[in-house]
Length: 142
Image (tube, rainbow, N blue to C red; front, side):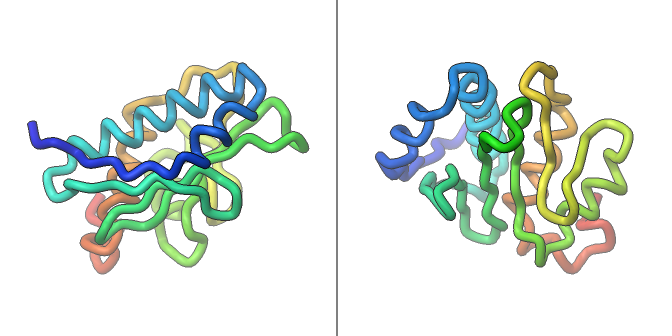
């Protein structure tokens, strides 16, 4: 397997420390899934982990930014965010409408106490990480 280089901004680690313990656990698991998925995509050799809008964000060449966060106004949920100008979330909703929860054209929302559908979420992550290669395809090549 190829080696994935992770460029991580130290502010991300601080952000994770400031989440409530139950949210931190879920967000760290989501982070791990994003990095694992990036490692499995052959064309991705480098990923940048930084803060965008104060949220942990993951960027790759030829991909669309993935962000994640927990917010005090919805204390029992956390979310994975995508650029609302892409076709990502509408496509995810067509494919996984009965398996995942969505917020508009920008997010997949999870309950803190749920076990996520890892296979479905991983598929969504893959499409986001390769978005600029697949955006011209019907249903993003799904």
